[in-house]
Image 1 (cartoon, rainbow, N blue to C red):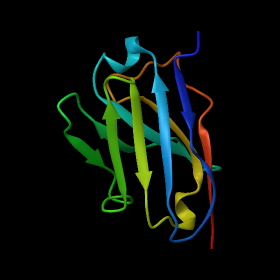
Image 2 (image 1 turned 60 degrees about the horizontal axis):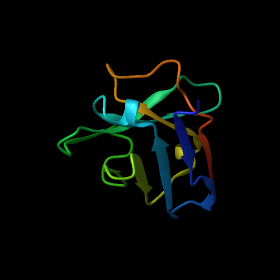
Image 3 (image 1 turned 120 degrees about the horizontal axis):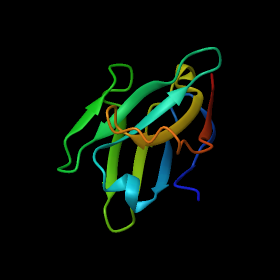
Amino acid sequence: QVQLVESGGGLVQAGGSLSLSCAASASIFNTGPMAWYRRAPGKQRELVASISGNGSTYYADSVKGRFTISRDRLKNTVYLQMNSLKPEDAAVYYCNGAPGFIAYNSWGQGTQVTVSS
């Protein structure tokens, strides 16, 4: 049973925007805070942003002011609006529970983001 499905990635020029979506199963979405992660080639997966049940957010310093995370309880969906994209933002983006709430057996396929300079 697929529990996390990411979408919305693509190719964009530096300075452009993309909006990612993550459809999550209720069992994951309702467990706790949700997060977006990314993995660039040759690098470890890193936390990009997280959002708690009450809407509190966290952003990595590298994306602060450019990315916005949000969640829709009715749709069990988490979003990541990415603006002012930089080549260093290029990676495969994944969603899952926030650190401490990760569903380790449920990582999705991710969605590829490519940023051309």
